[in-house]
Length: 108
Length: 120
Image 1 (cartoon, rainbow over the protein chains, first blue to last red):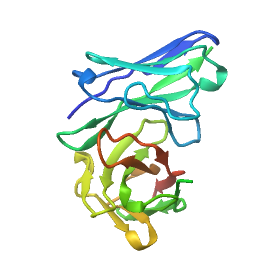
Image 2: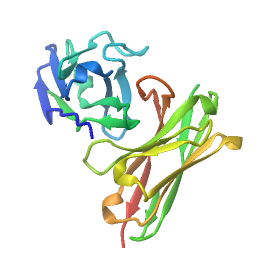
Image 3: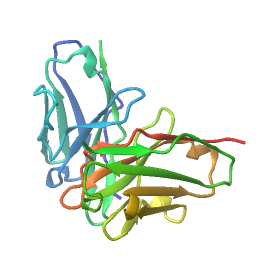
């Protein structure tokens, strides 16, 4: 089955830019969605269809997808952005939802 | 306002079964898939399967085929997840979540989660 690979952790200083990768075979041919999960809470979507942002999500969150890597970028990182982030795709041949293993974003 | 409200926490013994409900409101029940996703303590998200409330069609992750059954009751806009032969490693928070029925199924709304604890 299709596998998504994320780094376990990313650290960044406040005000800097964080980039979280999501690797998969020819992931650029799929649509990638990103979720943020804070402790004790259900996940929320922060980016869908590679780069679309739901209402209420700051413009600081952006996404890109090409080749074998999709990337979630968080600009001007704030302490409140500290959370786990998961990428997700739809594996259409099997009609399965696939999640990456998650990345813990730490704001130093 | 879209709402997915799940049933309360459960404690079960190994070998037992558990049924978790997900009552929806604020939208047409048949217009969106309902997925079940679980998260073991300190672990990532694990997709279990989806149900199309419109026709009852289901798809299960290979790992859960034979142990999970997804059903729905359209009269009360509620979906159910039935997990059998529970083991200690089934201890997790179980979420129901909604996605479009077309395109790349991204999840736009989640339930609050139901903690299922399996312990002798």
